[in-house]
Image: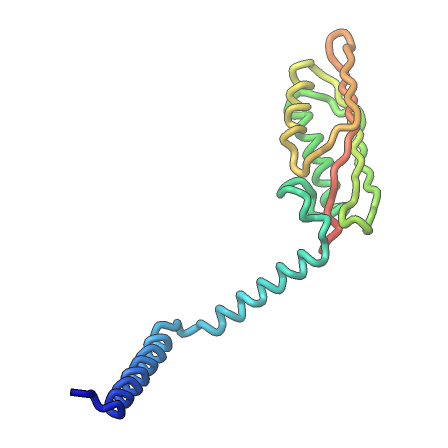
Length: 167
């Protein structure tokens, strides 16, 4: 017997309609109440990320912790206080310390020069240098001079670090 083409077409159509209705119903049922708010929040975050990547392409080349947040007086003062406290905790006397920013808005980062002179026991001076290697922001060495002063050593350090100018 030949199946009736019309009945077969009607059965397929009804099957598809029921399947589509079930799919739409399940999709609506599976969607959380605050779905639209969550999607809007995600869209906002994606736009913020896109703005950051468009606004400061040079910053993508730096690892986390390599840059200080800004070359503001507040950040530079905090770094100065940290270096002085670190030297003092190791038994070193701070003879001189200067931190001088050189703004360069064109690159997205400011170069900040650091010059430091401390004196004290040799093991404390080498420990201080080791602590600078773990420093955040990363301090790049330009010059180090460690000289013997009979019962103690004098450590003269010149280097630089970078601060972000992106807001």
